[in-house]
Amino acid sequence: MTRELEGLKLNLAAGHMSRRGFVAGASALGLGAAAASFMANPAFATEAPVKGGHLKIGTGNGATTDTLDPAYNAADATFLALRHCGETLLNVTPSSDLEHRLAEEFASKDNVTWQFKIRKGVEFHNGKSVTAEDVRKTVERHSDEKSKSGARGLLTDIDRLSVDGDTFKVTLKSPNADFAYYMADFHLVIQPDGGKDNPASGIGSGPYIVESNEPGVRYAFKKFPNYWDANIGHVAESEVLVINDATARNGALQAGQVHMVNLVDPKVAGLLKGTPGVSIKNVSGRGYYVFVMLVDTPPFDNENLRMALKLAIDREEMVDKVLRGYGSVGNDMPVNASYPLFDASIPQRRYDPEQAAAYYKKSGHDGTPIVLRTANVAFPGAVEAAQLFQQSAAKAGIPIEVRRVPDDGYPSEVWNKEPFCATYWAGRPTQDQIYSTVYLSTAAWNDTHFKNADFDRLLIAARSELDPAKRKKDYSDMGRILRDKGGLIAPVFNDWIDAVSDKVGGFVPDPNWGLMNNMAGLKCWLKA
Image 1 (cartoon, rainbow, N blue to C red):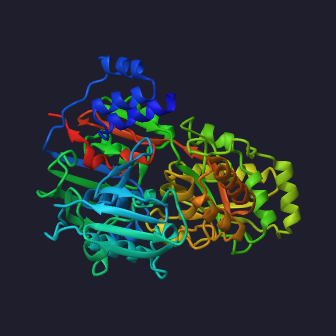
Image 2 (image 1 turned 90 degrees about the horizontal axis):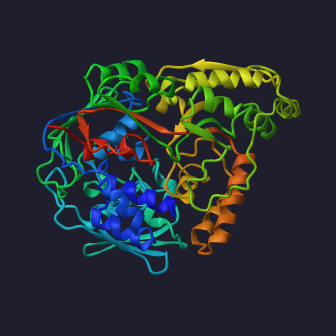
Image 3 (image 1 turned 135 degrees about the vertical axis):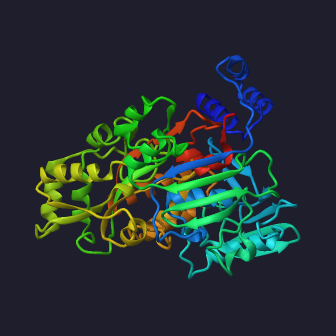
């Protein structure tokens, strides 16, 4: 029950729930007394949002090759920008519930046919009303078999899309109890005519209009006067500044040039915490830092070599030296105990140089250095993490060459192209969604090129399985297949660490992603 109460607290603090709703929800859990005590605490007080002002956000992970086409939304900079100007049908709350946005209702009687009633009176920035047909065309574009959308892996089971008045309907080929969560995926920003004419225009139905679009440099926004939700979008202007260099990004915050920054390196979090007028906001969740191998590319098409590398990384050392305690060890699969139906009985993989050496010998590798590409933008501490990996692997006789590459263009030129590189994932609300997004054979973002028929079969079966025990078994089997046969090395799960000026009100950490699931620009305000 403690976990449920903490979820209610997060939703209340983030503005997804009223005080009355919080008390009612806690009472339904039999925790009415605890809720009353929490609400009576003088430390808990809801500030009234202040309207107006110019908010500035400093972000890493942006490039000149970025685009505002939501299909290619892969980096923090574009995610922040698209949160300002666009909206999805649903949002995932800090407690992993679903919040109605452009869809005011949704339902399914059989988990095959899903209906989403589209909110009336919502406008795009070009003056056109948002309709169910716009939604249909948006989903159609992302689900097309030729689409490169990051959401395509979620949409491969769609049989038919249709519209009935103000209702958008999806008919699936097989039942999927989690399908509604797909409609909160950050790629599925609803666009006029589905974005088929000009997907990178930045025209959406969000609270802010794009004033300036300079990929890798700056995005500027002004408040959309006809926005439908008075509880979102408090500042008059918002600006996202791309500052990939972590030292420069933190310096901009300390100098008052920006009001908040993301991707704070754990090793400097303590220093920033000591800066007058700056607070560190961190929260654990489902994000994970990884090294990915393309399993269809030599030498990583050798399963014994992949296992050797998985055993040659010291996970505890990375938690201590890279994360500085802001995280936990990973197990070469994308899920941890924060996910429902997680199987805690799967053995934790640990550093074993002797076993790593044995698998390396068995692989028959010729001994040439294995090139691992990395950059600061890959994740906070990525260069140091690669160097630690190199050192721990050397003790097993495995030669790794760490090749540091430029930050600019890393997501487009290195990730999902080079055979061995560092990157990170934010996690997703459900096991089905993270597995479908990244590890399904047909997923556009399958960044290890992992294709396994048994894995795919289990994933599809789990979607329609309503027995929690059987579904947990399916997910467990999937996790073991990926852990032992895949190209994913997931040594750690990270905390999201942001740094925020005390001039900012309304900031509540969200375990889904940093900067309040990249909605800080919409939900925060500047104190009077």
